[in-house]
Image (cartoon, rainbow, N blue to C red; front, side, top):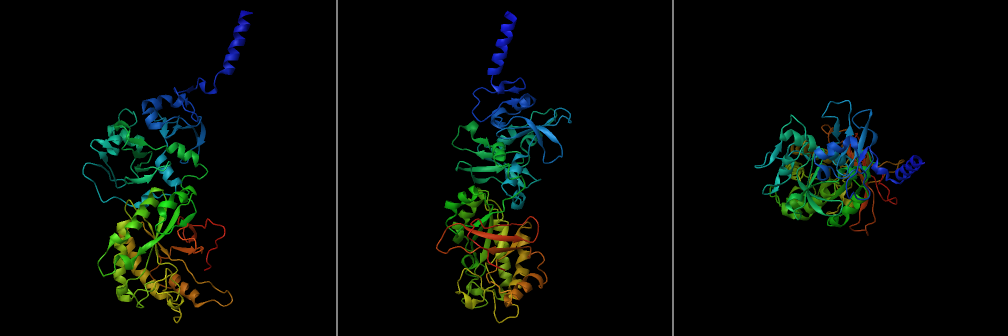
Length: 480
């Protein structure tokens, strides 16, 4: 009878025991709600290679998952800052591998780190990584990203300090730059293949470098596969970026078409660049980058000394000033392709197919059109692109050139000459094979909504280009 009672009590206590206390798991003291216990297969690795500060709590039970880089499934467990994969086919100590959390999260956000380009070169006192062209530096005397990278690493025998750190964090993918965190705080941040470093200067010295919660962020957005950028984008009027960029990011927009680089404003006198005039725009571009948004920069407005039609800044550039514009674009792209702006996409003019008689001389619309020309002025625009495109690629080989959106509508039964204008511009002008890669169309917005986010639609003639769709259902794209 005593044996029976003992067995019954054992059954009762077993049933009342918490599910996470199974023998195959290790639970941590004071474990917060929303976390789970570590699978024993990963516990020793977690403890030996940094524990809570490096990996965080486990946030999902271990189970089979398909690896994006391999066809088979592996036992996987997610932590707040990383992802463990059990590869029993490997020899010790390489049976547990880490996910490329930084690279995957950047891809999930639609951010092309490689497109930012390389830094100018090594900086004294910093670590230089030739493979990706980035420096890792300290932010204070003996404190910061460099010291943290050098003082942490996987506990793997036979590896020096550098290789241990490389195994844990991977190579730097970006330069250090200010970004807005998920809770709205602006932090100096640097992305690595397997981590995101954040600088918290107000913390005690040993906690000033924190690792981002990439595991939690990736799992929260798993319905958006890594490597798939959002198709949605917006236009934000100048001066309203600080108030609306966060809303655009929260709506999972990726592209932001930013109008603001006016050649006439920056270079009112030939050869004299007044960059201070775009200080506000520079702040806007940094705010976009901090939200992980991809900027499409629009360049327009011909200065008086370069105007084909005097008094019309919206119009064509006279032939003798085309080389000056190419030089301006070379300097502009070189200046703003680098951190903290990271602009890769450039749209040359806006709705440039309009005849000057249809709009005001300083209109925000382009007015390169010529109603008396058989090709509606398309040759002038094409000639400009032939000069400008090589200059842009010289400044940044990864830059992409977008053609400005068309404005004029078309009657299918009585096509306008503007159709010939497009034909000449896109398909009948030699030397434009690279520049005619992408086109963008504007979705008309209510002009009373000054400063509001407006939708844009873009089409891509090649895989991987920006496909920016209107996010407001009442907007329709202008016909082309």
